[in-house]
Amino acid sequence: MSNVTSLATPETFFGIYEELSKYNVHLNIFERLWASWYAYMQNDVLATGIMSFVMHEVVYFGRSLPWIIIDRIPFFRRYKIQGSKIPTIAEQWQCTKLVLLSHFTVELPQIWLFHPMAKFFGMDTGVPFPPLAKMAMHIAIFFVLEDTWHYWVHRLMHWAPLYKSVHKIHHQYSAPFGLAAEYASPIEVMVLGAGTVLMPIAWTIVTGDLHILTMYLWITLRLFQAIDSHSGYEFPWSLHHFLPFWAGAEHHDVHHEQFIGNYASSFRWWDYVMDTESGPEAAKARRERKALKAQKAAQKAAKKTA
Ligand SMILES: [Zn+2]
Ligand SMILES: [Zn+2]
Image (tube, rainbow, N blue to C red):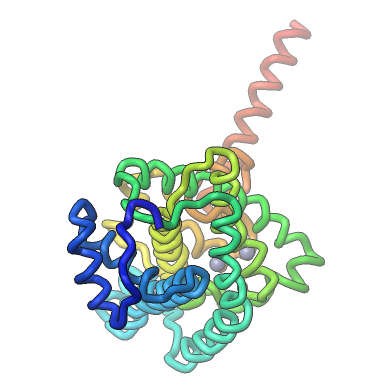
């Protein structure tokens, strides 16, 4: 740990915290808790592994819970994108079981490998933490990079052989719900999830400047994005009304309903530029664009012959 005055072998977590606080007055409470955790564990790989796994479970199920509750409240039906398709408790439980199985079998070993990998590529795990503005900038960059990865890999997953062998599982629910965000084949979890983990690693390799806390905040926000975009609800206060390039549930719900188009995760620009927007409105706009193009070409040809 950098910039932390070392201390004698501690006994309890709060004992360490007290001791560490005496000598590290320059650190804020979160930095002290963070440093105490690593000092208490005496094993950085285990310390990062446990913290990452617990964080992932708490955020995933914690963020899904409000959507499970909303599904049971009739008032919210008016905001449900695919009207009557409310998931039953049995469906949600079935989904939870597969998600948990994949968390313990596929994600746990990867999470354990994360600390050595992060260290190897020079990610910072110490205190003090980086300034908020810097963390925000890094997270914004990761959103853009992950969205690009997601668009192309997800689009590839819709190529028939890959769709049948890998991606079909995720499409089991044509009307998605929050918990279904990570309902997918283990291969898909690894390949699509790589965008979330490998982009920050690539950033660290290139710039040598990333703190693991920024990584945690990024993963938390990315989980929020993934769960909310599967929620199945479109509100007048949904984020894309204020940020028109934000994808949100309205964008991804159509993907599940139509099985085609709207491949990006966080933003709308890739589908717009590559002309893969889904749904009847997008199809209408596409027809109009084509008609306009044909009309212009005909006018040009007419001018030439005149
Ligand atoms: Zn898909
Ligand atoms: Zn989905």
